[in-house]
Structures are given as C-alpha cells and as structure tokens.
Length: 187
Image 1 (tube, rainbow, N blue to C red):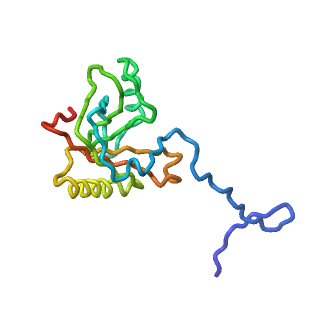
Image 2 (image 1 turned 180 degrees about the horizontal axis):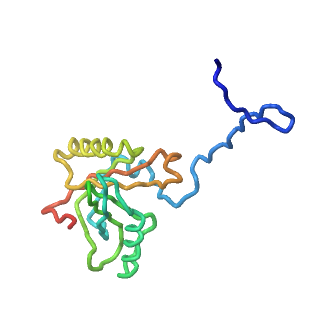
Image 3 (image 1 turned 135 degrees about the vertical axis):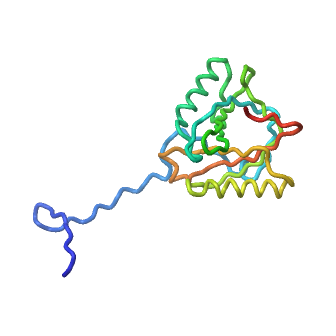
C-alpha cells in the first residue's frame, strides 16, 4: 500500500505549490572582523609591539563557555584602566580542555597588560566546529616545518558570529606564536 502524505490545498481544492525560499543574503550584516587573506594567510607577523589583556574562560572538553560575557568583561576592564581597544581587535582563544585563556588586543600601558613579544605565523582558513582540531594541527605542522620547532603557543581567533558563520564558511584565524628569548607566557 502506498504511503499517505498530506498535501496542503488552496481555497479551490488544488494542491499548493511549494514556496520557493527567498534567496539567502550572501553575507548577513554583522560587526564581525574581516581580514584580507593576503595579509593574514601563511604570513609571519612581528609581535614586539602587541599587547593583550587576559582572562580565564571555563571550557567543557575544549568548548569555551560564557565566551561573550568574558569578552565584555575584558572590554570593560580595558576601559576602566584607560587602555585603548583598536577597531576589530584580535580576540584570541588559547588551548585547554577545562580552562582556556582569552586575550583581547589593547594599546597602552596598565597593570595586567601582557606583551608576548616574538613573532607569529598565521593561517586564515574555513574551520567549522569539527575541523578546529585538524586546522590547529595543520597550523602547528606548517609552523614546525617553517621554523624547525613547534610554536610556544597556538591561538584561535573566531572571525564570525552565529549569523554569518555559514555564509563566510566559518572563517577562523589560527596563530602559531613564537616567543623570543625566555618565554614569559600567560599565567
């Protein structure tokens, strides 16, 4: 026996045609940073003048929790101590299964500002949730091949929000950071 299915009818008893969805906007409007691939993909950057405010972030098996609240607190803390936050500041997330470090790029001097120094090698790639670990490993492998040793730190910058992630293919920046001299890492 054929399986029955429901078909919606119009006022005259004729089947309604399936509505064609409106074309999706290529990139929904949001305030997410946009990076030029030529400036960020497989590029080495000098970090001698980069400064960050740091905050701890709880995580559940690597998935950060309360990310937006931690970001807001860092912005408020920067304002409270008189630090300037540049337009589209780097917002970097460190590694960790149960606790992760969140860094907000700032300009100026104040207690608690971390200046990592050294240099960084970055890769700008699409990285949906299931590809994050693989892309981080590829970044470490590319950096190790290029510099002969693994990086001191690996940072991730999620460049998209929930509204624009799919349209922008989950654009993510992976950074392999190398300290120069004795490492003065995050607390």
